[in-house]
Length: 148
Image (cartoon, rainbow, N blue to C red; front, side, top):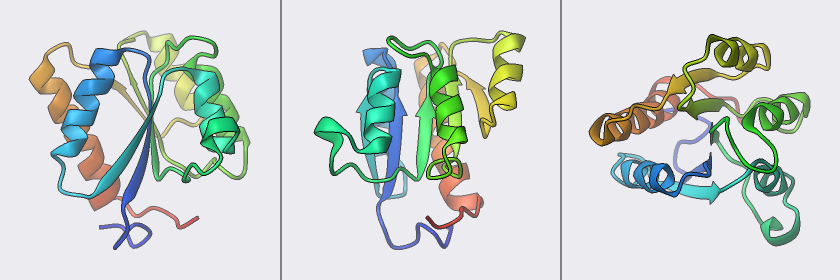
């Protein structure tokens, strides 16, 4: 387990506008071996408000990991990613793109914007849950993350 998260609850920000996908991700993360606290926001502007602790997110914790969909209302995931990675307060937070898009253009663009990885959501429910579990396992068991 990463030293930066050992002994504390893991904070995950899930940016997902599809209620079904958000529910599946929450179920998968509930079954994971680490204690985690998942915060769900449904559009890009809400994600930035959460990170900046604005409005109703005044006491929001700093996420240890962000799971970001690309096709979001109000502000798409590409713009959210660009703003996260341009801000020195947030650029070290790992951002996992979790989207239905298989477009090479999206893959290249998000890596150019410094996404930490790009995962296409499986259509199969069981595979989707397995992917989310593997994301959690990789980022919080194998990888060494920097402390804030």
